[in-house]
Length: 125
Image (tube, rainbow, N blue to C red; front, side, top):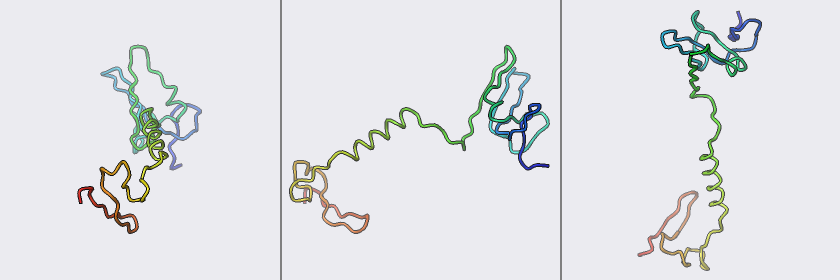
């Protein structure tokens, strides 16, 4: 027997990626990630058949997402990425002496650096 589970649909030999279960009491078809092991009352479906799944009239289809599957970035994610790139590309104003003594000297001033560590002095001292 092959270690890869196959789609339960007749004449389909593609590998299964999702498991379909029916909850008859609630008239619901639940399609979720591939179950850990095959059970007789569940149906394993390939990607094509799981995407095209429809339920009988009056039934509801519940599609559970796989938390380990990669997700597409949302609009908010892409906007945050674009803002971060814009911020990184913005030129830094450091003044003429290179230590931050210019017009933006209200924050801490870098005194020394060793590797990725920085020694900062507060603007008060």
